[in-house]
Length: 277
Ligand code: PAF
Image 1 (spheres, rainbow, N blue to C red):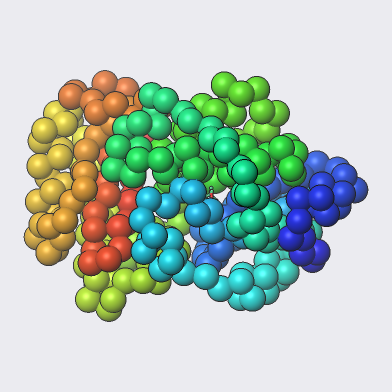
Image 2: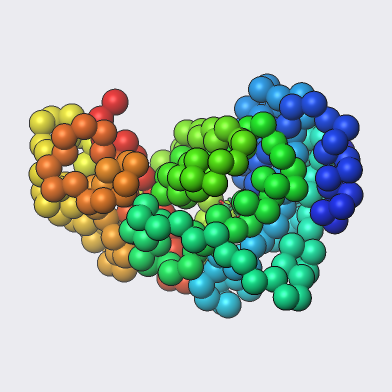
């Protein structure tokens, strides 16, 4: 497995590959990331993974500083998966002095996560536009846990005529339902014990919908009750949205997504579940 740290070297090495499947990550890899890598490996001649904690998508300096990192462990995991190349640029390599460009997505990027974390999706869209330009992958792989991120990426890729196919893969969950996330490592034992309530709340909404319930107010109340009963009172949002626009849906008509963001101490977790098959 080759490791590249500069844009120039990355472009040169990539030119030797045929079709490339790209898995962008911020490192501290877990099973969810590895499932993307395996899919990319099955569908392309070569797989490139980036390990880059992108500072411009973090709102708070503390969140950036506390984001878990384990580069050597990540490299070992990726080598074991047969990844062809890992791209690990320094911040100054991607954002040299004088860098002054931002890819701003409107509409879908301004709701929910976009409203709670202003600037977050511009940071994601900017770094991915750079990666797509540098690596020129045929396909790029993302987890459905970040459902709104997937919708934002599909939007700017289409709007900017970027030639890459965006593939989204189902959320990987621990046995108790907690979605894999690099942030889970920062939960205390007590917080980790409460965290499965996120998935439980989503499942309660799904069960109600399968039973015929269609009202957002009823579904929101049911999700919040599960969270509160588990001792999770710092609810950023727990709601039902259209999966393409991320507009809240008063009455569920077609596809709808139950979506939530909850603070557990210093950690903010998100999760989602489609409500109709
Ligand atoms: O989902 C992530 O880990 C990040 O937002 C991404 C896509 C790697 C961009 O920094």
